[in-house]
Amino acid sequence: MKDYDAIIVGSGVGGGVVARRLSEKGARVLMLERGDFVPRETDNWSVDAVFFRKKYKAKDTWFDKRGKPFDPGMYYNVGGSTKFYGGAMFRLRERDFEAIEHRRGVSPAWPYRYGDLAPYYDQAERIFRVHGDDRFDRTSPRGAAPFPYAAVRSEPAVEKMAESFRSQGLSPSSLPLAVNSGAAGSCILCNTCDGFSCKIAQKNDAETCGVEPALKTGRVDLMTRAFARHLLLTPDGKRISRIEIEHAGERKQLSAPLFVVSCNAVNSAALLLRSADSAAVAGVANRSGVVGRHYMVHNQTALMALSHRINGTVFQKTLAINDWYFGDEAFRWPMGQMQMLGKLQGGMLTANVPYLPRALGDRMARHGMDWIGLSEDLPDPDNRVTIVDGQIKLSVTLNNLDGHRELVRRMKKALQGAGYPIVVTKSLVKHATGHQCGTVRMGDDPGSSALDPYCRAWDQRNLFVVDASFFPSSAAVNPALTIAAQALRAADHILATDLA
Ligand SMILES: Cc1cc2nc3c(=O)[nH]c(=O)nc-3n(C[C@H](O)[C@H](O)[C@H](O)COP(=O)(O)OP(=O)(O)OC[C@H]3O[C@@H](n4cnc5c(N)ncnc54)[C@H](O)[C@@H]3O)c2cc1C
Ligand code: SF4
Image (cartoon, rainbow, N blue to C red):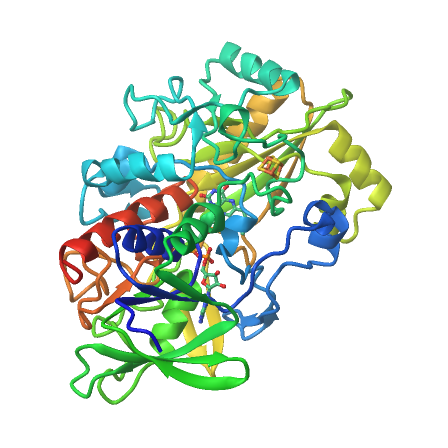
C-alpha cells in the first residue's frame, strides 16, 4: 500500500470536496467508496428505470423505531446523493447560525457565525458553478456580490406565477442552481434533473466537482466497492490507527495518519458506533454520548397546484419564496422555505402513490405546478441512529410541525390566489432521508458535541467527520452547499495543522 497522508471514507459532497482541496494542495489521498460510478446511459433519464425499477437506489434495509424494516432511499455511488440531487445550492441564512426560538423549542446556535463560513460559501459556489440572483430574496446573506453565473431564467408559466405572487405582496426569487446552463456548459435544461443523474454530466455534483478534479491531480486513488466496517483505535483510544474494509470479498486493514469520514449522517454515525471497543466503549468520538443522536431531516411537504391550463414548463426548478422563513407578525416563529420542484411526470406520481391510476397521474402532472415546503426540525436526542444486531435502526418522532403547517397553509393560499384552485399536498416525512443531518454534531463543548468547530473529533484528534452529520441545527434550506463550504473550511484547517 502507498504512503497516504489521509484516508477519506465516502465520495459525496463532504468527501469529494475534501479530497479535491487536499490533493490540489499536494496531499496524497486514498478515497474509499462503498458504491461504484453511476454509468452514463439512456436509463439515467428514464422515469421507469429511476422511479419504478429504482435502478440506482441503494439496496439497503434499515429499521424504524418500531423495528419495522424500510428502504431508506439512499444512493451508494461515486458522488453520493448529489448525482441525483436537484442542484439547489442555498446558503444558510445569517440568523440560522444563532439560537432561534421556534414555536416548539429552540434551534441551537452553531459554534461560529455566518461570517466565518462566508468565504468558504464563496469558494463552494465557484466550485459547484452556482447560477443565481438573490436580489429579491430578503433573507439572503450574500450581500451585493454576484453569483458565479447568471440565474437560470424561469419559463413563462413559472414567471407568470411569480408575477402573481408579487401582486400578492410576496417576493419570489430565483433559485440558486448547480447546473451548467448558458455560458457554463451544455446543460439542456431538461425535465429529468431533480431526482435523476445527468446523462451528459452537466449537473455540478460531488463527482464532477470534487472527485474528478481530485483524481486529475494524480495524487488520489479511489477504491470503489470498498465498504468501511470499523475504525480501529490505538490502545489508549486516542487516535485512529487503521480502518477495516470489505473489498472484493475480503476484509482488509488500511492505515494513514489522518482519517476523514463522510458517509452521510446515518452511515457515519453507524460507522462510529460500530467501531466501539474497550478503549471507546460507546463508540468512536462518542465520550459525550451524542453520536447517532439529534438526527434531523427537515419537515417536508410537496404541493401540486392544479388548474385547467396545461403546464408546458420543461425545466421548472427556478423559483423560491423565503418571505415566511423567520416568521412575521401573524406567526412570529420560523416557518421555512418554499421552492419549486423539478417538473413531476405522471410516472413519478404513480410510483410514489401506488393507488393513483397512471392515466390520472399523467393528467395531474400535465396540469400541475410543483413545489416543496422545507421547515426546520429540532435536534431531539431521542431521534437517533443505533446499531441493533449489526443493523441500522433509525428512530424518529417528528417535531416542530406548527411552523411547517402554517407554511403549507400560506403557500396553498398563494397558489390559489395565482389561479390554481386545487392544491394537492403530500407530506414527505415518512422515512425521508434526503436531508439527513445532525448525528455527529459539532460544538464548543466536548461534553455535548462530538466534533470541534473544524469537524475534528474531540476524542480522536486524527479523525474528521465532514458530511451533514456535523450540523448542530438543520435550518430550512437544502444542505449541500453548507456541507461543501464546511468541508473546505475543515480541509484548510487540516492543511494548516496536520499536513502543514
Ligand atoms: C433526490 C434528492 C434530491 C436532493 N436535492 C438536493 C438539492 O437540490 N440541494 C441540496 O442541497 N441537497 C439536496 N439533496 C440532499 C443532498 O444530496 C445531501 O445532503 C448531500 O448529498 C449529502 O452529502 P454527503 O457527502 O453528506 O453524503 P452522501 O452524498 O450520501 O455521500 C456519502 C457517500 O459515502 C458512501 N458511504 C456510505 N457509507 C459508507 C461506508 N461504510 N464505506 C464506504 N463508503 C460509504 C456512500 O456510498 C456515498 O457515496 C437531495 C437528496 C436527494 C436524495
Ligand atoms: S437539466 Fe441540465 S444538468 Fe440537469 S439533467 Fe438536464 S442536462 Fe443535466
